[in-house]
Amino acid sequence: MRAVVQRVRESKVMVDGKTVGEIGMGILVLLGVQEDDTEKDAKYMGEKIANLRIFQDKSGKMNLSIIDVKGEALVVSQFTLIGDCRKGRRPSYSHAAKPELAVPLYEKFIEEMEKQGVHTEEGVFQAMMDVHLVNDGPVTLMIDSKRSF
Image 1 (cartoon, helix red, strand yellow):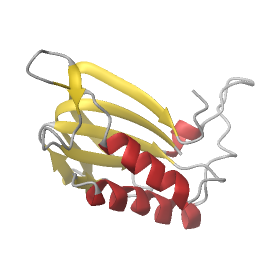
Image 2 (image 1 turned 180 degrees about the vertical axis):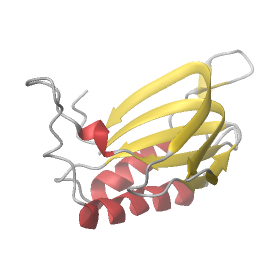
Image 3 (image 1 turned 45 degrees about the horizontal axis):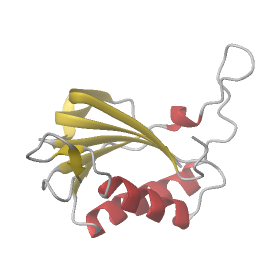
Image 4 (image 1 turned 60 degrees about the vertical axis):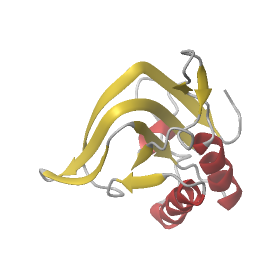
C-alpha cells in the first residue's frame, strides 16, 4: 500500500461537479493498493499516518500528529501511485490491486484512521475526481507499507 500524505489547510474532492468529501485543517491522503496488500498493510498505514508528527507545536517544531491537533483526513483512492515507470515511457499498473481486493483494503484503511480518532472523509472509488487542496507548508510525504522507500 502506498500513500502520498499532504498537510492541508483545507481540501475537497468533487465528482461530476458535486462535493463528495471535504475537510478543513488536516491531511489529504492519496492511497494506492497493491495486489499483494493485506489487512495488515491497511492497519499499519492507518496507524502510521494517524500518528505521523507533521504538525507544528508551540515552538514551531513538527511534533504533533493529526490526532493531537484534532485535524481531519480526506482519503482519495489513487491506483496510479502503484504505477511502475522504470521501463519505457508508459507506466505499468500490473501490480495495482483489482477492485475486489482494493475496495475492502481502502475501506479498512479508513476504518483504522477512524479508530485512531481521526474524522475521515473520502472520495469515490474508481470515479474521475477533482481534488482541491491548499497545501500547508508545503508538507508532503510518501509512505509505503512495505517500507520500500
